[in-house]
Amino acid sequence: MRARSAFSIQKDVIFAIFVREMNAKFSSYTFGNVWLVLEPLLMIVMFIVLFGLRGRGEFGYVAPPIFVFAAFLPFKILWQLTMRQNMGAVSGARGLMGFRQVRLFDVFMAHSFLQGCLFLVVGLLMGLALYWFGFDATPRDPLLLLAWCAVLWLFASSVGILACVASQFAREIEKVISMIQMPLLFISAVFFPMTMVPEPYRTILAWNPLVHAMELIREAWFPVYVSPVADGFYLFLWTIGAMALAMSSYRLSWQRILAQ
Image 1 (spheres, rainbow, N blue to C red):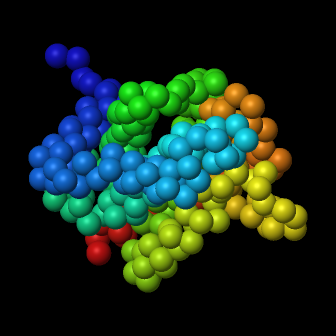
Image 2: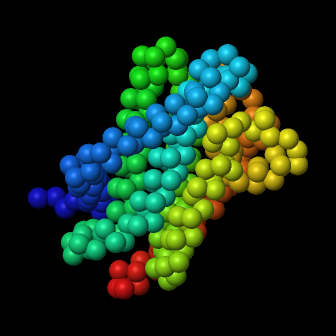
Image 3: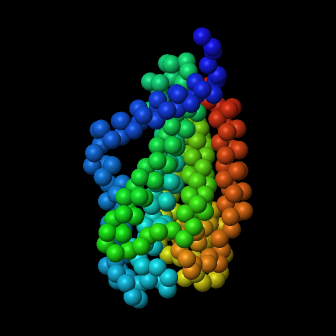
């Protein structure tokens, strides 16, 4: 029998952990998973109440339900949930470390892939629901949209790994990161386009890389929207920097983390 390659073994390990996490998520917390669809839906209803279903609440280019759907869903699943799952990966991986084929990095990958798949499934369900109610949520450039969503997903995965490593040395980091998630929701251009923000606040908010992610997603989604601040290179720099720091810190600290 020919020996299996290390890549083949790692691929099967990640898939096994992925299936394990998916079964645990969908078999034990039914209402928690329904909430993945209900939360964006409630946000859409709130915007309908505040801005009206059509007409003056269209921000000049898109109806409020589609506006919320296009920004809140990537922020919630690709950023918040992906980062949070990786940040807390160690506590759920203790039982798996007894298998010599399993590495902590495999757990990070499985969690990240799970959130990416959830984003695609929930996004498809929400898009069909909007279409059923008469809203066309079809993206202008689907491939470009998926590309920017993938960059945001990589950024969130890397920040989650980095936060996981750092929190093993200072547990307060988890609390701090959890506390800033709500302010980030309101300063990351999730509920407003940057065209509505006057200077000098626009320049100040543009230091936040999540603003660029939201604006680039809007540009790829909406036919007539042009962001005044979106910079893909800036977002790439943050993503590459976060990935480099995450991989370096993981490489230096993974044995110490598991030994705790």
